[in-house]
Image (cartoon, rainbow, N blue to C red):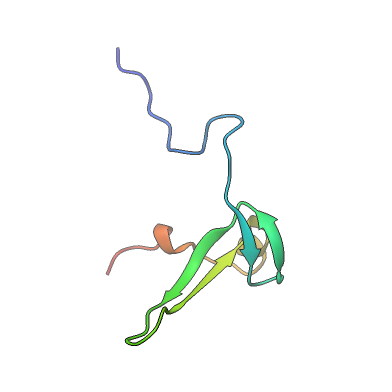
Length: 68
């Protein structure tokens, strides 16, 4: 019988991303990429949000958006 496959990061004790949340302007655990703005001549801009801000502002992580 096949073993059920868990998505990465769902196992107990898994590490989550730690970084800067652009919505509450502070560091937090569990941040996800919300927006990536590419520029023709430069490094571009990325915006990250923590779980509480994603819920509060109804933000959808970039990876979870439907493909056009």
